Image 1: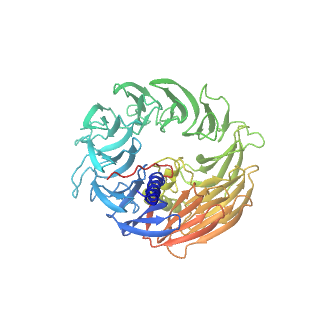
Image 2 (image 1 turned 90 degrees about the horizontal axis):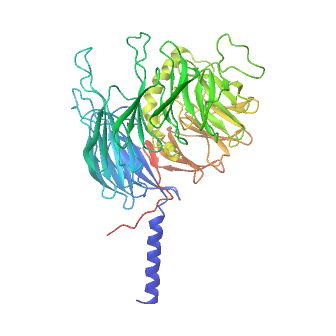
Image 3 (image 1 turned 30 degrees about the vertical axis):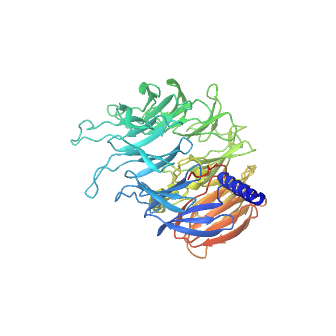
Length: 606
């Protein structure tokens, strides 16, 4: 071989090696009308082409090695807001290198969860099944395990019952599937089929174990060390003692696959919280069906620590900033639960009880329930929206000083009260948009390493990411999205002073701190608004000439915002606060994924 030939061969080898570790600078966008996968050059912002796929796309993921894009069809939730039952779910597999659809894989009915296992070697697809009706045959829930090397189904795990929920160990050695029971045909008779927990392994369709349960499961969670699985049964709260049943947490030993403990956790337990930084497993409940006084139940392994009293009408548990513990929010107080030690005796009074002494000067009453919360970094404070008893946003925002243990300010944000008729209309719209919100904001959850999240536009269940609240990077300013008046209220967190309002256009959907922190960005139906966090002045108002914004993708690594609109991709530079370009040629795009920059791809074998 000549020297030139050897050099050429070396260059080819180097180029191949670079490709093996450096993914293409591409985005993959799913159009829905008609259905296709659009491939976008994200370096030069050009539409490279589209690949037709089956109708009703409802989710998209890309494997950790950046080899294949997987598009779910006929999933449980779809952009149309409908739960499709006409056809079972399917999975389209797009080869990234060839940009061709290489396979369509059949799945079960109403698939709603997709997760990669063992560093992407396997893809798990969980389907709920269908109860059957005049048009569709009754089908059980199932778990389809796909080998992503061959893109073939290696196992279909079925419990022969309707699916409810699924969790699995980090190594996927055990897959826990909860199945619903079946009601008796005769009213008042025992359940025809009891709920159950079926345990599978990754490489066998035969269950490792099946555990019959006495009641339904509202939540499932693994302990951080994965030694125990917790199953929460909410019970039946009823003021008639003969009909009342407290909530119960059943503890399953993961090694023996048996229920080793069952613990009473009070009336109407609000949820099961496994703390991500400690061994704590928390359940908040109330004393009885007649008494809304809160109780905190904590499990350590399989054992229940004696319950302690907390405030009335418990709401949720959350961590703020770097605090070494959790905050418990109830209707009337906020209390700290350290990672080690007893529950703090001091607390922040949110809504003092009737007949309580007047609050000290500089301390305010919230006047409602805590809603969406944010930490104000560097300020020792948090802020949260105030909700009414029906779960609707009010015109209030509370700022809590965690150092002085007091509600420092209750700010009127300008939302105004909502008449009952308008509220009910908003509720109906909220329910209709729920499924759209679930998947259209998948990219947000993905960037936070949270594969799935669900939010309701008007009724917010506290969960990341925040949608109605944001703050400047230093926590000095709060930005509140007013969904009734469609504007952003800017608030100085030091004194609670309202600095002004910035209109964001009709149909306000979300406010966030843009990558780099220079701007607060608001998304509405047809407008992106940027507010300079240094001056609190409107920096940019970009209105679509046509169509609407379906979803907003946050690209932290490249400090960009990418909006999927009805007909285009709108790309914004979050550092300079300007529109970079608009890429046309799309048809109702709803989902976007991009290769992981850190993924290592092995060269294809011949």
